Length: 149
Length: 134
Image (tube, rainbow over all chains, first blue to last red):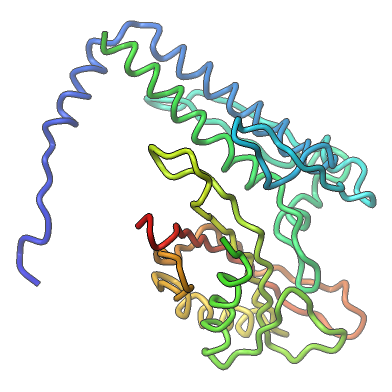
């Protein structure tokens, strides 16, 4: 191994930093807005998986869910225990989507999401998150592009 | 785009550790300690700049189970060492190295009739495209 395994060209990063410095004041508001929408959509999609309204996995070419799947009939309240929370943090915004342990069957969220030593998981949050992140990233890119004009 | 072929490749890696590995179902009287794999079917999405859903991203749920916390963690580490950064071989597919996704502290499970066990969960991601698209 040589002392130079890779080169980093930071010119584009510097250009992006300049873009942020020139951004309009409401850029931050737009980022908060799309992040909150992403959190809400993740919550709704995860609830949909658990309620059996939509499939966890199958989507058609336009991104719509195409197959139905059964929800856990022995956990009728688990879907409604999913909540999201959004809060400002230094230089940004934080969104959290998860099972609210104060709601009925909320404390069972980990068992549903990850399974147990003898039972398979019924993942809802992870697939919902995976489906939403690319959409959220595209929206963030659009906001940054708008700020660069 | 066979999720089954990917799962088989992962099971082979896990079983090469010598740890008891169950495939999606744990028998009524399992041999402790053990690992059990719950693979999902994977997401099929189009790779960037294409419109054909041929990129497969699978999530592998691995439970490492022992009668003590130490046993569960030992199994979890053996499995992680066998999987992480490894490219399983699947005919006709180009696979990226397996990456760890989520890990959780061991949980005590006292719901079984005859034994109290500790269960350490970790999830891994496996991603592939057709070899012709790599």
